[in-house]
Structure formats: structure tokens, C-alpha cells
Image (cartoon, rainbow, N blue to C red; front, side, top):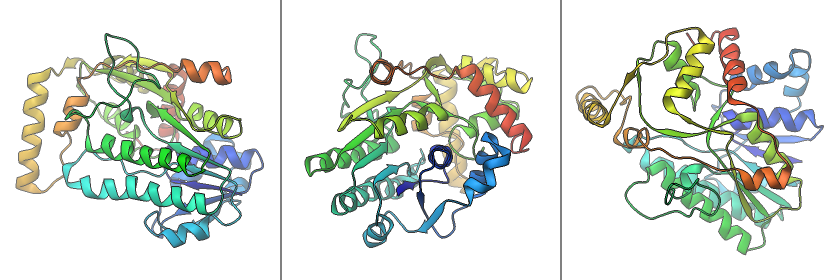
Length: 339
């Protein structure tokens, strides 16, 4: 038996399909009010004929990362754990909840996995837990976190969560940590990178001068499975396919939608005014800001990532981002979830 947390998210839903397709018995931890519709849509993306059969094989287990005893029950007879669940937000008002979910929740799952003698624990971390590039070099597994004021609350919560996993390895847990860059692929357009696709489809006019890494969700899930089933243990792997400017990526998405790509560059001054106006709007209307100080800052960073370690370890060849974008857009159009 395999336990997957965050099964209704982008990575989790694709991971569920891949594991079930391989004939694994899968238990998915979920909350009582979890929406599973996007999981069904992802299964249909892969194979319409097998989608319902495989989906019905999921053993949904109602539990909570903050309820240690429910985790012990969820881990009964489990061999491998894939911890994909996380709260992603850049809103200051979500800070406490994010630390609770991401850090405390991971600590509970790690401890419960040790108590249940889990054979392998795979944690989906983030490139947000890595340090900044030094002297223009690409960021990789050896680029260590620097404790300064430039980290978002999200990255801090994920870094502390990752520390809980490394703590577990000192207590006997065999763990793999993957650090994906921006993950794209079919899923819920209201969550994760789906929001970028939705914005472009709806006529996004501005782009920011930053750059980052991008990777197809299938590369993330497939490498997670391969690493978990390998002899690798207590190691981390950056999972990133291509480094692109935001303008380059958004143009690819716009071309796939056959719509106008963003053409107006939002510099530091424009972005600075933007997040301040959004904060004022929030105080006056209580509507959540579309841009925050943290997202404004990250949108201007130019970061480049290297997955050479992963490529060497697994002889991995990544799905081209052009292909990933086209297939993701086709999925959104087919499911009428974006436009």
C-alpha cells in the first residue's frame, strides 16, 4: 500500500494516476470537504477508457496532517509515502496557517512514518527552499538557503518542513526530497500554475522582467516514483526542465491559446505601485490582493536552475515545455475551465 497526501492537488492527482496505472494499491489522505472533480479530469486526460476504473481504485482516507492519530491510522500497512500536500499562498494573512499546515503537518507525518516503519518517504519540496545563485552560477542541490529577509513566508514554511524531513532521516527514516521549479500541467485552473494560464487566456497585458525554471508535472511524478523505487536515500534532487523569462513562458501560453501575448513590461516602479495599491484595496474592501509585496519581488528575480544531478542519476530526458504548454492549454479548453 502507498499513501499519497495532497491527492487533489496538481502533483498529487497526476501521481495517483501514475501509481494506479502501475498496479499499485493507493490510499489518498483527504479532508472531509475535499473536491475530487479535478482528479477525475486529470485521469481522463491520460486515458478516457481506463479513467473511471482506475479512479475507483483509490482508497480515500479522511484525515488531517494536524491530527497525528489519524495519520497513524492512514499509515497502516503502508510501504511508501508521497507527501505532496502543502498550502501555497503569498498573502500575509495566511502566514500562520501556512506554517501550521506545511511545517507542523510535515513534522507530524514524518514522526508517524517513523513510528510505522515506513520504507521510503518522498517529500515534494520546492526550489523556494534553495539559496540564491552566486556569481551567476545555476542553482542546484548544493545552493544552500541563506537566512535573510528575501524569502517569502511560503518558502520559509517549506524550508522548515524540509528540515523536518531531514530530522526524520536522523531518526531512521529513508527519505527522498524533490525540489521542483514551477510545475505546469493539466489540473485545476484556480490553483498553482493554472492561474497563470487563466490570466493569459483572459487577456493578460503585462509581463515582469524575471525568469525561473519550469517543469512538466509528469516529469515531477515520474521522477518521484523512480527515485522512491531506487536505492537513493536521504538525498535531494532539483527537478527543472527549462529556464525561461516570464515573457517567454507567457508568450508560449498565449500562442497556444492563439491570443495576444503580454507586451507591456512592468518594471520595478510599476510593480511597486501595483502591490501598494492592491494592499490599499484590501484594507478598504477586504478583497484578496492580486499582487503582494512578496509576489512583486519574486516576479523580478532572475533565477536559473540545474537538474544535472537528476539527469545523471536517472538518465532522465525532460518533456519539452512547448509540448507541456500546448497539452495543458488543450486540456483547459476541452474541459472549458479557462477562457
